[in-house]
Length: 392
Image (cartoon, rainbow, N blue to C red; front, side):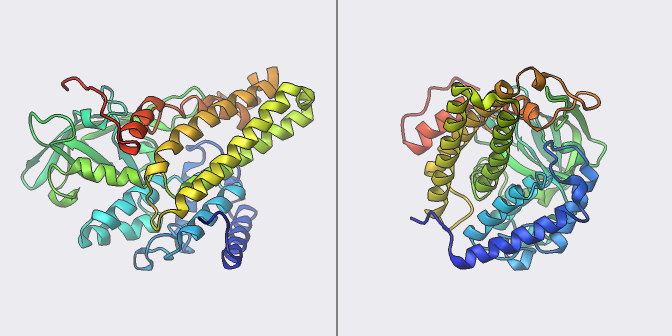
């Protein structure tokens, strides 16, 4: 089991850190430290293209498709240094971490040529069309329908919580293509261009003032017949393959962002005297221990695989970090006190720590609720009997 990095890997870390620090103190200094996903969206699209132009857009991909053939350790290092440098979250996270790897694994050669170069170059932004109003985290209950008509797929239905749909170019959609099918059967995985008359995107305002999420309506929206990944009716398998990439190398970069948040809480506690409260100190220590345990757990998890996708122990990771970060947000507000309830920003905008509290309320919901995660751990990780389910 490998829980550290070699000398060569640390040299790579220095290269990453130097380049990222230079960008955040130079041409892209205006986006450093942004904590919401929609602020300065156009500049962040420019940043995506800048990353692609310098070969940093998707370093784990094969060189033939715009990557660097980076090892798993190098991908982890880049993700860590990316967060350490204060670079904002990737607006094309879905394309780089989910859509792209799925195409590399299951896409045809023509699909790879059609999509991968522009994703790697930051020119095509993807979003995800899974959740629905009456399905939530239960992908097997989706009702959005797709039918073949005149050499094209025609899609009708609604998706919800579609992150960054309003600034994306393409969406992958799981739709029911077999009339009368139920559960995971009869689903097809489609890639659809968003800029077309049959798609309507409506923002959802969040409690932190941001509008990262959207409702996405499909009314006769169309895509080419060959825009599906896998076979007709094979959408469940494709979706499960895609989701297997979600708990991969980005976990360590995510933890570095958590490190930044915890450090900000510690600094605030020292500045306003909250650090003299023994209960606050105890909670900070508990948060520190939890963060370190997550890091060692993620390193162990990733060291047991040669691939960016992981399973088994990885099933526990979402519920672990989501619960930990929700508690971190509560700690932030207790450290700030009344000062954390007032903002100097225009409109309903918040600095890092109040925004952490507000945003982290959703951490245990999106990407699969804690309840869903417990089912996954029980059924897929431990092999326990499936929970009884009624008729869909």
